[in-house]
Length: 352
Ligand code: SAM
Ligand code: DTB
Ligand code: SF4
Image 1 (cartoon, protein in one colour):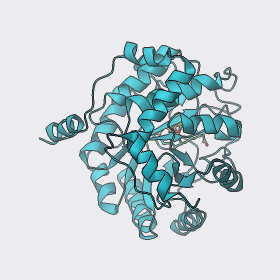
Image 2 (cartoon, helix red, strand yellow):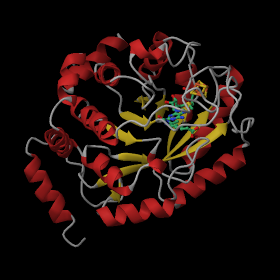
Image 3 (tube, protein in one colour):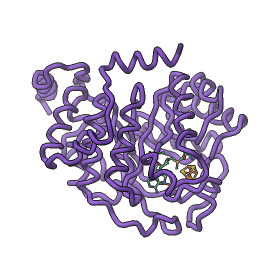
Image 4 (cartoon, protein in one colour):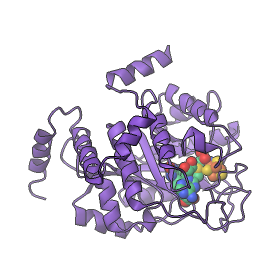
């Protein structure tokens, strides 16, 4: 019953199915054509100069039994990442208050678990309720969920659950052997069925081929409905992890991936996620041009560095970007005529 209404919702959204070859054809467009098309699509559904801000906190760090080859928190690799138990409520709330004061709209809490126990879910549900009471949107990423756990988190006030597919089904086995792609899809279905917004994306720069990147995007875009939030991470190469020596991906290939995500999932919020610390301002601007409209905001991701808040504020000022929810202009949803929306937006910002 639930599954039927969910795919009906996908149909109502006008969602179509994408083959990997069709997505590869988008990737193969001349760069300027691709970015132009992505920006045009972006303007039909989103305010063109708004970027959503999410802050991230690792509430339980390291000692994870999984073997994700990119991850500094896996117990299998010798990294400098410290191990920490679940943080006390007050410490989490202090970080959430600080995030709110610096302008974040959403607070995301990450735990290095394969799959949380009932007691761990009880503890996180309490955190979710407290963070929500501060007036922030809530998001958690805790690993694989069992039946009933998503509903418990929803009842505590959870808005988003992050669970990434990471890469294509074909490349997945070269990166993670301790859980299957299908396990990830099962957790995503539990989240969707509980009525929580799905945040699901992946990582580029792990040595995958362009076909793998297209395969990841196809998996995401063909979910019915596709995720509300799609984080695109550029691999952060952490010494001690198996992927530490991986070659850098061409930055324009990264921008192409953002553009292809925007075109295939026009209404989603595409997050320019990990890897911004290693990007210069021009590359980030190009990512926004290609349709990215969310970032992680705050000096730290989970265990690695993120650009300083002051640097992000300066970048936004130079680009005339405003944090989502802070603009007086309305989101031009369901727009048929992007140009009219641009005019409406420009008028609302005339004094800017
Ligand atoms: N343990 C949970 C899980 O794997 O679902 C939640 C935390 S996990 C660290 C969340 C996501 O962070 C991963 O799925 C991966 O996409 C991303 N991530 C982890 N290490 C990364 C790295 N070095 N570079 C880029 N993204 C990374
Ligand atoms: C996501 O896609 N990226 C975030 C968040 N979801 C949880 C995590 C990035 C982690 C980068 C490596 C680290 O800081 O440990
Ligand atoms: Fe554990 Fe998540 Fe890191 Fe994988 S990505 S090792 S599941 S914390």
